[in-house]
Length: 226
Ligand code: ADP
Ligand code: ADP
Image (cartoon, rainbow, N blue to C red):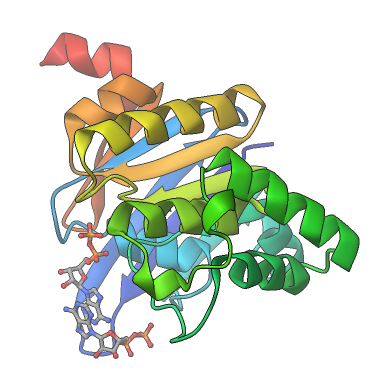
């Protein structure tokens, strides 16, 4: 069964704009997959629909075979999403954000605390655990969002432009971290508008433009055609 299977996915926003024009996509378990496309192509819309934050207009989404329409809680457990932007509450502290998130996924308190420590340490945020998230630098917020997406240990991790606006040093350390997570068995999909990022990290790639998939192949064969 595919880690992600999307069939004929359509999204028309309330203003009548058709952001997704019938997209088909399959990502196999263990893959490190890039969804590449220019700004406005429909990448965030696709992620929004997969995570059920954006209501789709048509089509099917399955996560490890679980239909997001038929079993939303089941699909949610299998999926972690790192959005591009996130507004933290005014006084929300790093530690509490992660523990609370674990609670949303039904983790018992003790396990939630263990996982929170594990991922805050892995992402270099443990020393800052009592800081208010709003006061963090952009790069730290990004790492916080990755910890938040991983705390229930999803089988599929999706990141929306994870390294946009991040300096080169942090970008490299994020790449290494994601490669480790992938090597441990987590399927990863990221969106990017840098071919270089897709090339450094990913095995397979789909290119989206104006709400349509225009290419879907391995990075190796894509680079041969350029
Ligand atoms: P849905 O169809 O999923 O309910 P909506 O069309 O209601 O989505 O829009 C959701 C939100 O996005 C609205 O608050 C809207 O103001 C905002 N929005 C509208 N146009 C754009 C745009 N071009 N890009 C980003 N956000 C937009
Ligand atoms: P990307 O992530 O590839 O930059 P998006 O999925 O954010 O692209 O946007 C795809 C298209 O849909 C863009 O033209 C954008 O302006 C439009 N769009 C995004 N959100 C909304 C919304 N809520 N209402 C209307 N149009 C939207």
